[in-house]
Image (cartoon, rainbow, N blue to C red):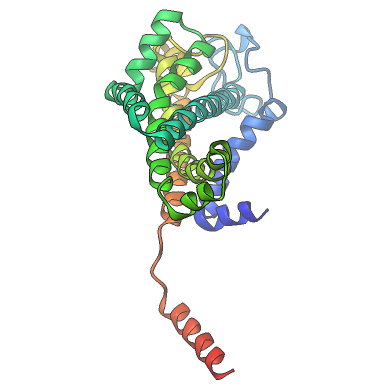
Length: 291
């Protein structure tokens, strides 16, 4: 509960509501969708906004609102999987590299540097091109492409922490390497990884949409915003809402995650004390002296 309150103070109500809305849709979307997102009804194809179909229907008579909700679920599920896979593997590699150092650090970091030198989307495109277009292949490709980012981030945090006096004290007291890594170094790196991941989620959502738009990610009839965009392009002139709605949904989600990451990162920085707070602290200090 305290973590939720701290997050609310750091981020603010508007961003919490925005991210919370997408999370709610991802978790309970199946229950709030008015129709089956894949149910076709050619007799109601290409209908505009109405009381029956709030956002109209597509060229196959599928409810647009239901497909937008299903697309949000698909995107957030994919983003969560990629962050868990890439973050976990990257933290293991970065922790090993930063703790042991030496030749092992050199070898691992040169491999990581090579991975960072190639754009992540290019790596994902190459992997999907080899294994074929599929949702799980896309998730695996993005996870592999994102591992170097989290490995480099974790290595920097661990390498800085491993030389701190409290780590040296643990070694002197006889703490095992496993205990030092699991109990002390991993939590130190986890905070930085989570802050970066909160902002990186928007980039991943955009890359999932890009791969699906290119036909290398989510395949029909599964709903996904990028796949909805490419399917609606032939009907852009007669039904622009089919392009605008998924594009707008994706834009709002990316902006929301970017604002979330920025707010959390700024909350970790020390802020200058206000004059009112400084006056209160001074008065408290004087009372302690007087007592």
